[in-house]
Structures are given as structure tokens and as C-alpha cells.
Image 1: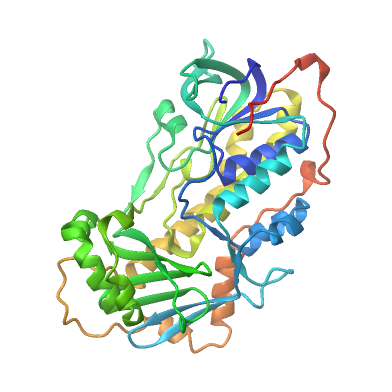
Image 2: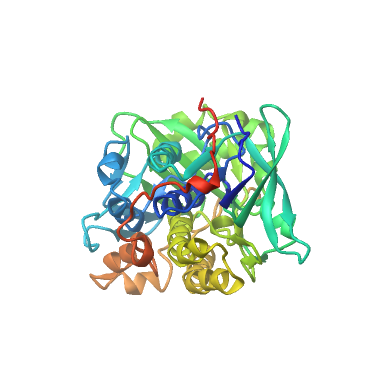
Length: 432
């Protein structure tokens, strides 16, 4: 159910993705009453952001969840290889600091379930499913002081007042739209087509990236199948899917000849389209409300940094806001501190993604000629690749990021505080 019997709490989080669930877990363990509103009835959706980097794995250790994560079905990648028509580049994670010298590929629903179950051990955490935020409640001075949400199971609308509303509801954020905030978009020359193909005997182990004159193909090793991202030009999805995805079958066969027979089985209904966006809000907050993760800055799927940046936003937000929420109110200057801390890692990461899209990642244009010359490893990567430490530097930038966050200050050590008896009972939504 999506309904909550309580009418007020300290913090309402719109969106039960990685950022929202991590933030809810950290606030609850710090004694802050928090309600996470997730519009879907469960986590079982076709997520494509399944890459968990070493920085996030270290955070799970700090949360005491490392062993539970290790028990989830996942694959470890100590390195990634980018293959061009002429040349290749390796991104190596085997010299990262700490105990996680790899990135992990895990179904996102498994990660979210682990985080939600851990948070549910706190009496301060409450997750409402099928609860879709539809409006913001404002005081007379314009400050946001809660949300209206729809129980999608019953069709009833409810109000939940809070000292702070946090929007973690993704690149199509409802909270952002209700605020009237518009992100500044950066040019993204590509879109992606996602599909699955079964593995076959003799297939190489590990994920692979193929960049050539025929376009770009990312192959993520899922054990018994390949999750494939086919990179196309911006706005070309409709043409690529025409004639029951005939162009896609040809493009896969040209880019990765070993997939030719399996690619022949692909049909349009097997393909999901991701419109790549890189955008960023000028200001991530307004009085009483904060936006983090993709709601504040949509990332390209390049290097799989989206989940990890969103989680780092959540950790920084929790560390800065816990003292303020314990006082009863997050002031505008507290919210601005969150943005200042996360601003430059976001800006620089997006700038690196834009350069990669421009200089490294080719797209298979539907109207392109087939007799293009072979694609060489781009400059300046060819020059840098002569340095033996380059693969490890790339691994650190991808696996750790520019400003990893840790559980310090008011979040360390984490503890579950006793619920405040004056706040009254809070009946969590029924599971299942």
C-alpha cells in the first residue's frame, strides 16, 4: 500500500532509487524520522544503472553491509577493455586503494532491496510503495513544508508535512517540475539502444566495449547473457527500429562478428531506448526542498558513474543535514552547503563525459556509409596509453571518482536512536 497513517515527519524523500534509499538509511540510523515515497509497487524494473564502483562498495562496508552485498549475485570486473578497429585501451581497477580493487555489476533491484531492508531495521525509517508525489505543500511565505501524494493502489490522495523534502526521483523529477526548475542541458550527441543476447560457448569472459567505424557496442557480462548497449546518433532510434530493427541486426553483426547469428534473432520489441541526457540545475534547492542525484544533474551512461555520484550526493547531504534536522529545520544555507560540496565533482565528471562522447565514443549513424575507414584509438589516448600508469589512473578516476564521500562527522558511528514518543505512532505501509 502507498498510504501512511501519519501526517507529519522530519524528512520526506521522493523516489526510492539509490540516492533516496541511501539517504533514508543514513538519516534513520542517525535518529531522524524519514519517509521514502516510491511510486512503483516494487523495485523489479528493468534498471540499466547496475554498475557499483569501488567508492560505493567502500561505503557499503562502512555501513556494515559489505558481507550482505557480497552474498548478492553479482560479477566483479577488475578491468575494462575498450577495443577499437586499430588498438585497444585498458581501464584497470586492480591497484585501487582499499579492499575493493574492482567494480561490481549487480541487478539494481537487489541492491535497493538490501538497502531498504537494512534501513527498515530502524524505527525511524518508513518506505511507502505505490506512493506518487503529486504536489508540494507550501507555507504562506512560500517555503515548502511537505508533499501531497497519490496512493496508486487505492486512488486516494494524502498529505505528509515535513521539515524537509528531498527530490531523488530521477532525470524526469516530479519534485523539480513542481518547483518550476529547469536544468541547463548539455549537448549529448548519442542515444542508446539496450537489448539482451544469450552467451555462447567460447565467448570471452568479462565486459567489453567495441568502438569502430560501424559504431559503438558495450557488452556487459551478466553470466548467462550479454546486456548490450548499442550507441546510435541522437534522435535516430525510430529509424534504427524501422523494419523490425533490421539496422540493429546489421550493426551488431558488423561491430561484433561473433554475435552475427544471435543478432539475427533481435526484433524491435526486444529493444529499449535510452535518450541520453547530460544536464544540471543551476540551483539544487529552494527553502524547504533539496534535489540530488539525477534530479539535480542527469549523467550520461558513460563509465556507469550515475549511481555512484547519486549515492555520494546522498552521503554528503546526510552528513551536512543531520545536525540541522536534529535542530528541527534545514535552513537555506544548509541546503546550499550540500550543493557546494557536490558541485565541482559533478561539473568535472560531466565535462569528462562530454569529452569522451566527442572524442572517444562513436555512434552508429543509421544513415552512415558502410565503407568508412577503420577507427583508430583516439588522440590523446594513444599518447597517454604509452605510459604504464595510465590504465591505473583511469581506473582510479572511474572507480573512486573525484570526491568520494565517507561516513564521518555526525554519521560516524551510526546508531539507531530510540523513537520520540511525542511524535506519535507511524504505521509503515504493508509489504507485498
